Image (cartoon, rainbow, N blue to C red):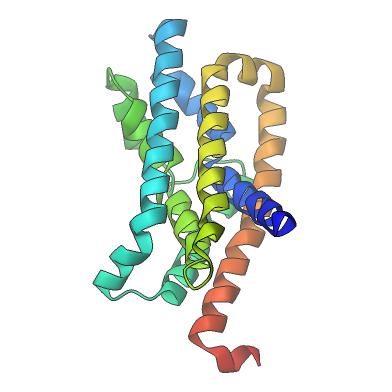
Length: 215
């Protein structure tokens, strides 16, 4: 069982971390906090990371219940979420900001705001539609199994939140060390991984909605 939990934790962490992608948020974070002191910037990073964790954990816990109330099936959401992640992954591979994560007006509004930790940093930049879709789909795989299988997913959300804080708190150093070329290479690799995850979500959703197609 321990090996299975470890495997599930690694799968969940890789999926959630790739779609949250705190490294892609570094340029936006620096632009929105350009007038802040290092201490205030670290506090903003802490609150943004905490907000990201709370938003994703909340949707992981209540997402399936919400969809059941709205009459949305998990297979349908897997297909829709997979398509959304695929669109985001294409933009990542092309190393351009994805409008599915954050738009130019939202960035401009963030630059003008005094407090950007929750909106737009935590949501929609970090805990956006793609991240929310990912945690809900991962949790949906555990609904008909033992309850403890959801723990690795929530743990992956927590680790991603902590990693997000470390990346954003040291955003200036990250950008200086990695440089634009290094950031672009990392973005393309993450985009390829996200594309594979997206297609798997679609395949799973189609297989559950139309099981005869995969026989």
